[in-house]
Length: 335
Image (cartoon, rainbow, N blue to C red):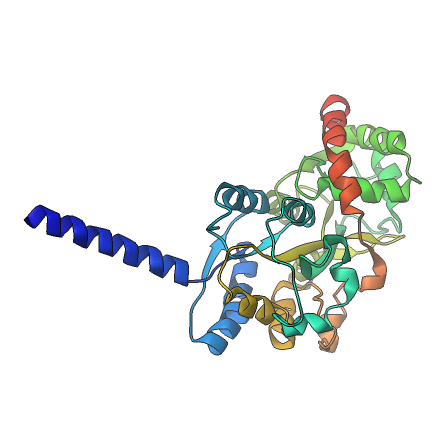
């Protein structure tokens, strides 16, 4: 009898724990400053509106997708930040709820350009661009455009102290797409340039943390890197510079999605992420542009943000289709 009571009690406790877990909204964020911003801006807004806390998990886009695919009827993650290409895959696989102004009113102030490639099932929450960082003590005349930087690297003008992103890192295919724009769509030319640069590349980087650490340790003098972190680093280190070579850069973005079969309260979180106050606070912390058109940046912040007109939004469907062959070619010819 006693064992039966204990078993029932254990079952009830288990059900209670499950109900609690299901009742708490689970969202995702990148780590570091991104996590701090999610806590201070998005989660704080949600708590103010609902009186509830959210559970914030730090997880990579691919991991999030795999976990949701494994349990689509009851996803372990409710609202997430995905990569641009994973967001398109999630749309194709029917994993997402469609965004609407009725459910997230602040969506009305997000221009269509930030949603159109995802058919309204995902929206960019902040965007940036891959630009150039350089050591001002070593590089007195930084190349004004991408072709000059690439040809100078091939010629050994900067020694073996240049680092570009690898095609095999998550945003590598997007950079390759941008290279195609620079070289008039000539894929053979792009891969030839990758290969010709190799002898003078300190590393084709895969880890963004490792890449910035290399630059901070002055192991490389030129680093192709994301603008927000680049400008923030340059603000804190007088020897570092950061700029956008001509003819601009490609847009890289964090995509906000809500999965199907998840709590309706997730729409409150989505709306919080897109709200003017949280958007501005997020931008001030991570140093990236955001998407709510009502936000007015302070002058000092605006001065270091990449304007939308300087970036090109990649064709993500094209990138998804071409990535397998690009990676195969990279592994055969460059790696």
